[in-house]
Length: 298
Ligand code: SF4
Image (tube, rainbow, N blue to C red; front, side, top):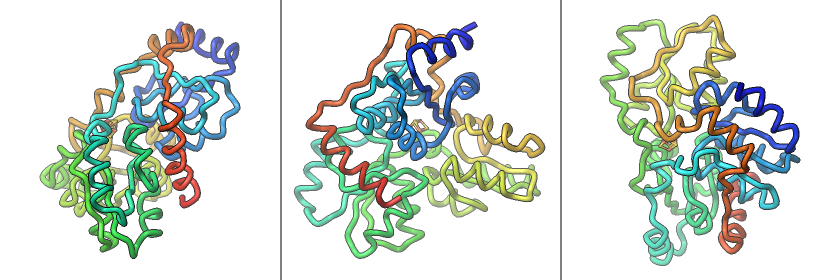
């Protein structure tokens, strides 16, 4: 019932529903577009819809508002936040910048608007490596994911400081998880998201963002895969590859904040235009410069 009502309202209000790969299956099914942070940012920047309903977490809806300031952006559950995004404090980063004026601040998209406003460039897990290469001779600070920052530092050998933040579901992955699953599924390839710790990533056959994992599994001739990221991605993996088999690397790979939105929340949000996301213009003007830099370099 909600599905039909949502589709009707969407048409009446010229709205678009954007959903992250980590959302519940029912949300992915009703969305106009399902993607990773990079693709969703691009879609938010280019849509002609009047309303963007963002099924994800707060920083994603906020990023859509920064890129599309004239549109109404709704987040169906107002307390859906990303724990990693809350691990960087504005005053601390400002202090770091003041003490290190020549350091390039490379900021993961998983941050609040005021942190983006202090940054030189934003990255996602899809484009971080490519963008960081533009600053190879500079000193860099990677904010806030210590694991992705450490992975880039290890892979590229650049001078990168890392902020001590992390994503709790990926941080909990262990080398023993990989060894156990490889023993159980000896023919499977192991595909892991770079928000996992370096020792775990070094056990992977492929390290990539959700979209890169999806493309890798789709293009591969192999039929079994161990997946080291949120279980929401399994929906898209199975949809694109009905004859292949996917095993989650461990049972804890489910972000509770990403699973908060259900069809009823989405319906009510669209019907009553709840909960609208706003960004103060003085912050937005600075944050959009760092986001535009990402678009230019990615
Ligand atoms: S999966 Fe991790 S990084 Fe993504 S929203 Fe959840 S806590 Fe944040």
